View 1 (cartoon, one colour):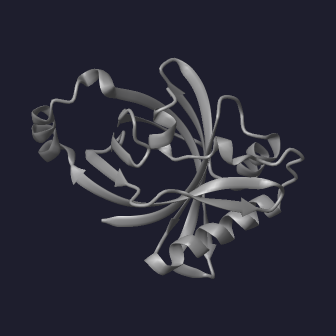
View 2: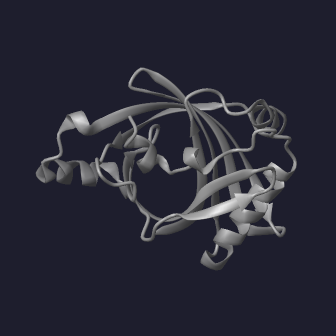
Length: 192
C-alpha cells in the first residue's frame, strides 16, 4: 500500500495561461497514455483504474473527507489523502466479472501529461509530483493540474503544501483559482 497527499483542479478549458507557461518552461515533454476508470456513481472516495501502458490494476481509497487548503495568489483547493493498492492485472481480471460490474461503467480517459517533481527539503525520499494533463473522455476535452506528494507519511502534507505554495507563489493569477474546481479523479468521474 502506498499513501499520498493530493491536490487537483479540473478545467473544461485550458488552465490559466501562467500555469500552462510554467509547465512549458519547467516540465518535460508530454507523455501519452490511456487509463480505464470504473465510474462509481455516488462516491468520490474510491477510485478503480487500469493504468494504461502497464499490466497494473489500481484501487485508491480516501479514508477521510477532503480538507480545504488556502494558497498564495487567491488559490483554494481540496487537500485529499489517499491510500493506493496496485495489483497484477492478470490476477484481478479473473476476479472482476464475479463482482457483476457492467462493462459500460468503464471509461477510457486519454491523457497527455507533463510532469515534474519538486523535492521536499532536499530529501530524495519525499517530494511532490506536479502535473498538467490534457484529458479526453466521452468525446469531451478537459485539463487537470495536480500535485501528488510522496514519501514518509509524516512528510506528505508538508511536502504538498510546500510545493503548492512555491508553485502558486511564483505565478500571477489575477482571478485566483477556486476550490469549486478542486477534486480527485473519482470526484471528476461523477461529473461526466
